[in-house]
Image (cartoon, one colour):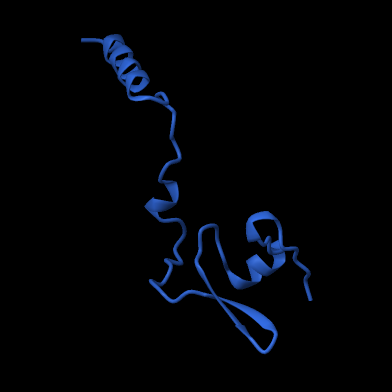
Length: 87
């Protein structure tokens, strides 16, 4: 049996071996119930996860900030890139 600690802001960190055994990934949603002195966590019902690997949404936000952190920085970087193109 694995032990977990209740941390600040009521957060739990589950051991990696339990995560792997359950086939869980970051941002998966779990249903939590309490009965007869026991807390039970189960994957929430929902859409079946694709088993063929990563989906396109696994990459969402991967390049955040690559062209700047503000709209003005992004516009400046895009303008500089466009100016560098051979025409």
